[in-house]
Length: 170
Image (cartoon, rainbow, N blue to C red):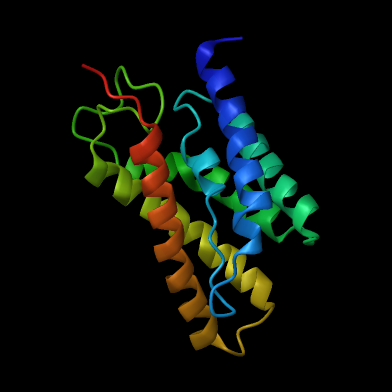
């Protein structure tokens, strides 16, 4: 098994453990839930097949659902994120493309690129997740407030993760 897959499996295990046993216990003001696990999907290798990406995203969401006693809401939102990630990458593609870049946290991609990429991915995930959770459009202002607040918190967590664990190339 290549080094990149070992790194992604270790990332999955550690981030999931932190999410399930620490972050899932945090709820701020009744509507902010910090979600770091999205970083697992965002940082999957760029050369992963579309089917592999969608399957991995589904497994991430299903794992969160299983440990959180949810009914597939995370699985649906994560699968959607896995489906749209190639479009997000195309939308945020740097001028030289992704040549010689293996994964989206490569130090060749600067922080501003990563912030745009992560913000779009997290936003799409949260829009899908929170509207599924709401179950209707009766209180759109509350749902939009929850989406916005959770995007900010999740983006901060994902950015801190990237800053702590990105490998600097000399």
